[in-house]
Image (cartoon, rainbow, N blue to C red):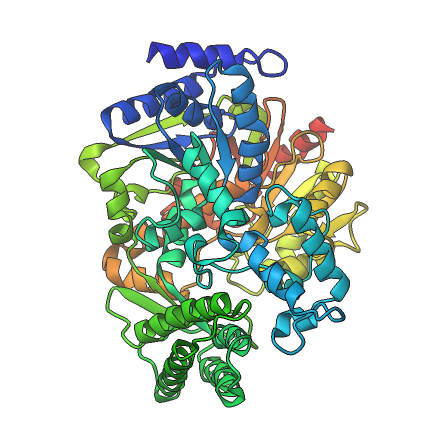
Length: 626
């Protein structure tokens, strides 16, 4: 323990401005070290400013244990690989290696690039009717990607200096469900994805996204290298991510993709046409259930699945009958067989959805998808808790998280590391208790008037968060003509550019929905007010949560709805104070925060801000910040 504390103090002293170890950071680092040494699990709530990245990275490095860090957002991955780990490598005094590992489809496939070039016949770069994606992609773009493939060290799409079209990238990459593996691929020795996996196998720290870790669990540990410790940062999203990766996602596009692969190797036009027809039939069958839970497949969906399964079996028979090894025939055959086998397994599975799973139809209306997910993710995670030391951390840990993900109570410790920020002095929590109930017709107009008054007092500088797209749009339409400040909204620009523009213009306002409740970092004078239109309870008809409510029965509100709402609210409120010098107001424009019987569960999940119901007090505080 002393070694961890000493190393943390030494490293923190090298931070810009001569940083110092925060009490919560030290407590967290020592708890992580103890968990690793005693093979226990740890759940840590570490508020903004704790410095949790150093606290969970340093102990495994000092103890010589291999660690995988799984994050829910790309922004945190980039921070770890681009900032935190290089800083540690420079100042820790103990050598270590680290890599970022992504899903296979994120890397250029050299074999696909070779096939596209070989099919050019000296004139056309595209595969001339053999590969529809390559045919539809611009020739210049394919050439540019292939040329980049001869120069890049990583083959990682993120390293491109331009954004390729969907068709071009799909034509030159493969998903895990298609790839035959390095040992069966002619370009296996040079493969970018395999090279990344080999580097990950040797590295001391591997940074991945939580979805990839979920795929690792779903495949029985076939994606990531063996490791002693896993850290789930942003652990409040773990349950939902594992539900997504442990389930099935089936739509017409699955048949379209198989038809494309089959066309590249089988000359049977009727077979390809039948696969494409199944894509349309499944899409039409699912469209009738769009947005709804599917308790039992109706005859139309069942027929589309069964007919499609028969066509996939015919495709597999046609692929097995191919004996030619000319050119790239063998590799194309292997890719098509892999995809056909995966689709066949999925079609079988959706016909036998058990009591422990829930099925529903989602996606855009023109391309609905049948989703099947486990109601309880604990069985999926059980092998992980048995074999690996896990650290789960977030600025907000939902109530009942430990039980919901199945962490063994006799081997799990919990810690609240707090936050070093002075919330009581620097921040004010305001509940507009006088507003009408958000479920009544009078709410919108009153809420818009309240929001206008608060923004005026703040001098702009507002991040206005909404629980629905329509609520955001109504507020934009109502307030943009009335406010003297620039009002940006979620449709204005891509998210990174939008946040950058909001940060640069100190008096601007940004109106946004759920995607901005997390992962948005705007320190300084550009943000003095965060408003939240209503408590973010989930929709009652959301299929997965509906199934969990049914299983929880009388405890449903306390164990399903309330933890989710409080966690989201805390994440939204957390956008306000990002540094020790930030000051401002979190305004919740929902009177239920002041009146509902569950209000203290919600309030206690938020940072310890001073509280008020008086708008005059809020306006005076905001004006003082100007």
